[in-house]
Length: 150
Image (cartoon, rainbow, N blue to C red; front, side):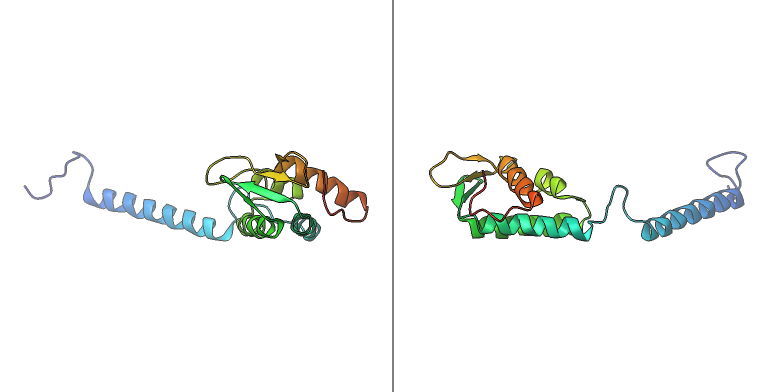
């Protein structure tokens, strides 16, 4: 049964040529993927990066408490935690503005999905997204830094 294929009328050279073409297409696709950034990836501008760093510093210097995943933490721990999230998002090119950072990194736990909260002084806790947005508006206004932002 030499020369018989599973597909009558299709020769081995035709199959070999088709497989070679598929391999070439796959290699071309891999080469293109290596030279083009991921779809939707963006670079964070220097000014946006500075704004996020100022926002994180404002949180760290606020004296407020930060709630995540069932526990309260001090402002310095909150700053350290959100800085790690910021660095991850920046490295993966998933943010392009302070608003993106607040929405994707500063609002809720990526582990539990539970919203973060910030509590300053004796006031009630607020969701961190609202606190960070208020702090961002304050930073952009050019006013001197507050110890606490509402």
